[in-house]
Length: 297
Image (cartoon, rainbow, N blue to C red; front, side, top):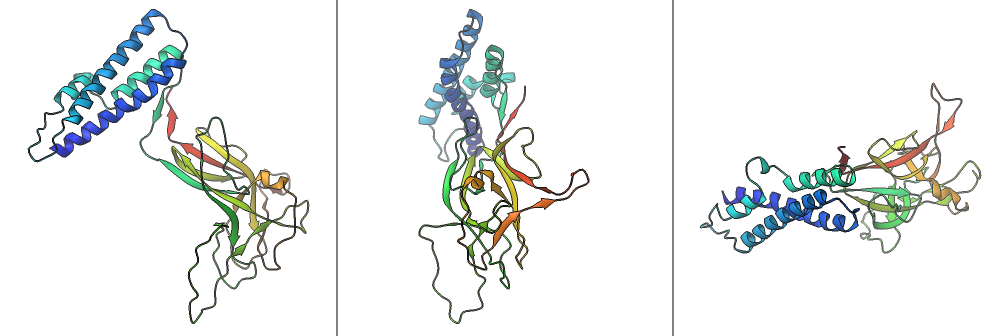
């Protein structure tokens, strides 16, 4: 019974804490409202404060022992709301509706599932920045690496390998025939005889459900946000089937150079033929994130 009680306490207190965190900065930046709206805002804030104080008192006196009573949050629950007011996320719903009616801001539901996702920004050593997107966290940067293009075997995927202080194990004796991992470079149609290493960055996108690479597209679907756009690339000369990657278009602004060895994999732009295409075309791509929000109004 106590565990069920604590789950209910956590849900309701999180609702109060979330709205208290949002309503104060919103109230300072919103346009001036008429007397009726000011009264509605003050009434909600008073109810919110009363409920928060009641939960603080109950939490400070909480008895989680075997003798703990199930009614020790009775006052807090009554302050939160009873009857038809005792609904999940009561204060968030109340605040969204009030904010929408006063300032016209959309009602946005923060879905509980999904707290972030990680993707590789192929072609950049940094994570994209945007005024509208949440701030990304750079986990590490490095260079693209993969199987040599004339290798007898190896992995089909590319990896973003950290350049500084790589952690390697000791040699195995006797050594089996190894599958090598080495630098992967890219080249363009402008200078096909030259190539350049591919920088990369591992980026954490907070408050997102998923990150997806879409090929043959230049924009993201509705409710998705663009992380970066570029060209589809693949190794056309490898003995090992390889994956496609979306190479950031910004990398093509860098001057080409010849660094790779004779057997290093070199990625080329991917061409595509289709029924509605006017001849063969280079395939664009875009990396999109689905935010943990959905606009309801």
